[in-house]
Length: 203
Image (cartoon, rainbow, N blue to C red; front, side, top):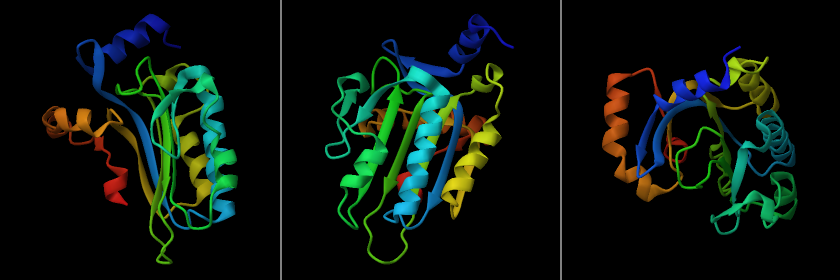
C-alpha cells in the first residue's frame, strides 16, 4: 500500500495550478454512452452507478449542480435531490443532468466527479452519457480495481460504447476550460495515450 504522503507527492506532479487552484489534472476516467435515457430501467441503473461511486469515495464529493439551474451548491445544504429522487420528478422525454464534484472549489479541476446527461427524447435513440473520475493513485489504497468499477457500470447500463483509463481532467466551467485549451493540447500531444474527454460533443 502507498502511504498518504507518497500519494500526494505523485498527484502534485500531475497538476497544473493557477493562483493556487488546480486548472488541469491527470486522473482516471470512464465515460459510457447509452440510449433510452428516459427508460425507467436505464435511470434505475444510472442511480445505482451513482450510489456505487459515492459509496466508494465516501465524503470526497462536496459539490452538486442543481439539475434545474446547473449551479453548484455544497452537498450538505440539502438543496439538491439525489439522482434517484430527481428521476422520479422528471416529465416524460425531459432532458436531465446531474453533476457531483469534490474539491474546495467547485470550479477547480478535481479527480472526484460523477456526472451524467440524458438528452431530450426525439424518438431517434440519441446518445446520452455517464462519466466518473478518480485520482490516478486511488486504487493503490483500495482493494478493488478500476476495471472492476468500469465493468460494474457497464453491466448495469449496457452502453452502446465508451472508454476508460488515464485522461485529462478539467474544470466544469467552459470559461476555465477555454483558458487552458493550449495547456491541454500540449499535454495531449506529449502523451497521446491520455483521453481528452468531451462527452457532450462526443454524444
